[in-house]
Image 1 (cartoon, rainbow, N blue to C red):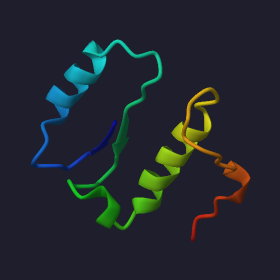
Image 2: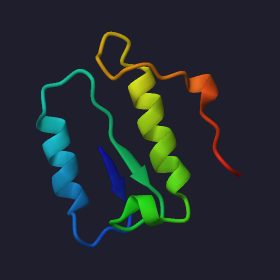
Image 3: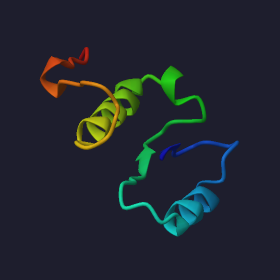
Image 4: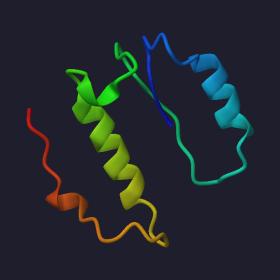
Length: 76
């Protein structure tokens, strides 16, 4: 779960509470500093995509397809 720190549409406390109640061992939560609701449109959106790609690459026994983290490059 990735949340925008300054999101006014999603209650981050409620989202964290829900996240803590879920039973999955394969879950993470990330707060994007200074970001609002539309995370992909934020100036720091590389944090969003990097977080997603890293999570997927750690899912060794899952059917996400092939992802080579060494092939992922982010613009500075």
